[in-house]
Image (tube, rainbow, N blue to C red; front, side):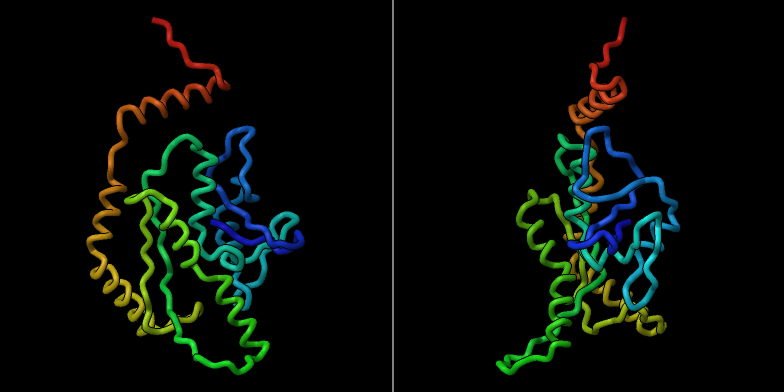
Length: 219
């Protein structure tokens, strides 16, 4: 999980709730730790402004990670490289929560401050810019993003059964239209590691266990 620290000044900082430790000497660009309980990670990473109160954890004040990074795929790739710097990416799977695009009015009149702020917030939290960059940068058949278009804008606190069923049907239709892409992603995810990759990972593990010294077995 990921949240936003809002009490350490500007710019705001992302905080990663990890279930792993980075190797000694390896530094991530992001704050984070693996000492927290799961409920704390969920509480902090879901504290969306206007819906839930900020969450105090230690000396920090946490809010929803989407306040800062609405599409954390690049963050996940960065963390992956911290863990396995010499291992090429096999598959990156990005799952969106759906997108609804409104048609803009071709007008040259001035907009209100409220409208300006709404446009800035909407653009700052847009998830597709990250997708566009990663799609261009990552090797073919490595990166897959699934993010259905929605014909209706659904609010975060929606709980009506008919609306939730609508979301489900929108998602099902999207997957039907993208069946070939879904099958390709499943195929890449299911690939076995090569023998050379397994040997390299085994050697790396032994070297790490012996603090950088090569592992030598006696016959």
